[in-house]
Amino acid sequence: MNGALVAVVVVVAVVAILILIAFATGFRVINEYERGVVLRLGRLIDVKGPGPRLIIPFGFDRMVKVDLRVMVHEVPPQDVITSDNVTVRVTAVVFFRVVDARDSYVKVRDYMSTISKTAQTTLRSILGQSTLDELLSRRDKVNAELQTVIDEQTEPWGVKVTAVEVKDVDLPQSMQRAMALQAEAEREKRAKIIRAQGEFQAAQTLADAAQVIGTQPATLQLRYLQTLSEIGADQNTVVVFPVPLDMFEPFFKMKGTATAKNGHKSAPAPTALNEGEPSGMSANGTGADS
Image (cartoon, rainbow, N blue to C red; front, side, top):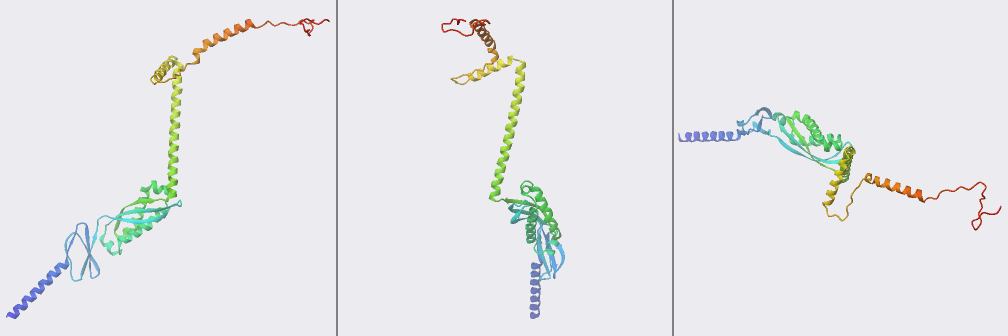
C-alpha cells in the first residue's frame, strides 16, 4: 500500500509539473498595440488580438508578435543626379505601420529591411526625374510622389506608408556659391526696381505739386518761408536763399531801358560823303587839289 501510494503521489507530482511547464510555455500576453501570429507545425492558423492567450506548447504552436505602431526609418544618404545634371546627397525619413500582421509575416521575410531597400531605390528614381529647383522649392510634391510609389510597393506586405519626408539636401560647394550669387543678384534687382518705383512716385508727386503751385502762386511764397524756417533751425554759416527770377524781371527791364537811352545819346551821327567829294585825304586833313 505504501509503495502504491508513493507511486500515485509521484505520478500526480509529475503531471502537475508538466501542467505547470505547459502553462508557462503556452501562456502569452499580447499588448494592445500588438498582434500575435500563431503557426501550428509551420502552418498559419490564426492572428490573436490583445490580452492573455494560450497556445499548445512543446513546439506544436509558435506565436510571433507584430508591432502595429507607426515606425520611423531613416534612409541612408543617397547620391542622386537630378534631371538637370546636378549631383546632390539626399537623406529621407519614411513613416510606416503594419496594417495586416498576417501578410507582414508571411509574404515578406523582413519588412523593415525590405522597406529600407525600396525607399533607397525609389528615392534615387523619383529625385532623378526632378530638377534641383523642384527638389528645393516644391518638396511637398516630391514627398507626396515618394509616398505614393513606396506605398504601392509595400501594400501587398500589409504595410502602409503614411509619409515620406526629404530630410536633408546637401549641395556641392560650387553649386552653393552659384546659388548665393544668384540670390544676391535677385535681391539687387528687387532693390533697384523698388528704388526706381520710389523715384517715379516721387517725381509724379512733385509734378502734381508743381501744377498746384502753378495755379496758386501764393503757395510758392509759403514754401519759401518754410524753407527759411528749416534752414534757420540749424547752425549754418552760409544760407542759400532761393529767389525766383520773376522777381528780378522788372529790374532787368529798367536796366535795359536805361542802357538803350544812354547808348542812343552817345552814338555819333553818321555822315555821308558827297558824290563829288574825293575819297582821298591829305596828311593835314584837307582834301587834295584836283
